Length: 394
Ligand code: ADP
Ligand code: MG
Image (tube, rainbow, N blue to C red; front, side, top):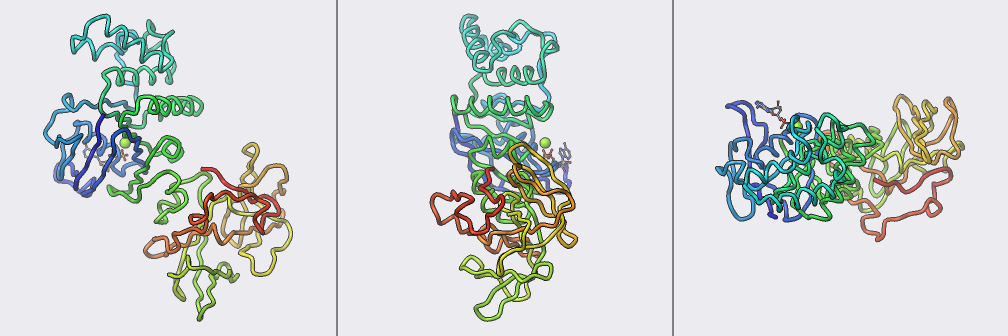
């Protein structure tokens, strides 16, 4: 096992524009880190530099205590799993898994013991004699993971390994990978553009954007405390609601004007907001309350018309049109409004993020529940929770 350190690591291809701007990163031994970001932001490039498959343009990369910039891939003791399964088609699963150890001239009975051990871990026992083409995508990818695991690498690298699988297999293999990591504790760097995958797998998420680190933290930190508008929009399902507003401050009184309504704000969290500042408010659908009646005076609320009701199971996503803006509320599906109904959306001040429209920075980062431990609130404990505000999960 090993830790990984990047110091001002950068990359440009053949004198082109920088693909990775100098970035610093520390990955601890045994940690499961996910590089998350939209397509083209430099995730694979970063991973391939760690693997030794891509030349480093600037800075230092260390695995353990050694700078490995010039160390060839095969001497780095890393194993990589790619999006396409990359198995040898003419070999059985057994031979595919054993391949790496045979090349190292490992004794035959030890190879056999280790192949059966990793095969058992990945539920491949019954498939060892199969050829890859006779297996499902999920089975093939499990075999590819087994092949990467067998050499007990110091570092495990995954580049979108689940992208080619259907949703059910993806969820299954995600659980397998997580379980495997809990058992082996191998330092892992995992690349994906899928925020759900990142949130469910990672000890720590590195959110990337345009060759830079946008924000890093535990899944919960990124979910609760997005530092930028980009992070707020990228993390969490269903996606964050955004509404434009303008701050009104006169003396002690603070409010934000939204679609003609003045929403009063109070508390130290909003201390940075300035009069006439243009802001983008953000709130997650699972913190939006939906009622049919009017809202009490002073509530942070908007009237609107139900446009769409999507039942997801126990919950439903209700899309409401409020003065030209579409906002979503995730509510229990037991009592749902019909499309076309007039409703009130209510927003808890404690759940509201406020971003500067120009800098896109979060101006009120410390959500109220960050100071309360534990953050769990039941619907009944919330003043506005008549019909369906409830604690959201990631
Ligand atoms: P991601 O994995 O996040 O989708 P990549 O690391 O593959 O992103 O690519 C980052 C950027 O680098 C993209 O703009 C891509 O076009 C560019 N790029 C990737 N590989 C090469 C290459 N071999 N030569 C030139 N540009 C490349
Ligand atoms: Mg990629």
